[in-house]
Length: 151
Image (cartoon, rainbow, N blue to C red; front, side):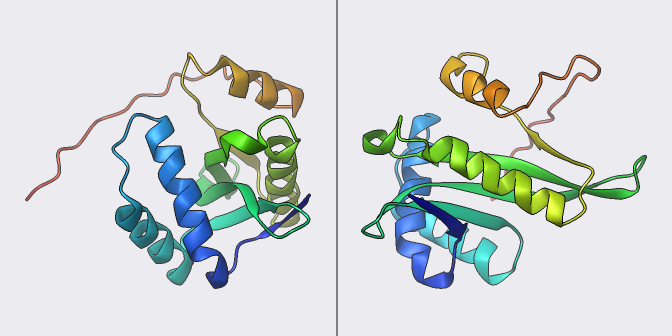
């Protein structure tokens, strides 16, 4: 297995993984929406995507990071927003390899930290994150204001 930054030629395979990721989080499958979303992020350089691939070049999973900033640290923060490994590839170490690649990238970028969130019931992911050195935030509560999309 090999982890690398995604390139434009990966669009279709990453979009398929992203669509499966969205379905995992109870969204309706929509490959065209997934492709358009990933394509826009890649073309606009709005995110960094890493992919794990097997020895035959098949993509096993991906992680997507978005940049933000810490005002108090006066440095960049990377938000690891998405991490997904295809069902057939689970348990092969792809998730951990993607987390390690994200960490190494953020360190090389001089970021203050790497942040992520997961659902309370996703205990498999929580175990992976703890094993990779992440810890649960006990200092801050995170709040969300859901915004309705205007038509």
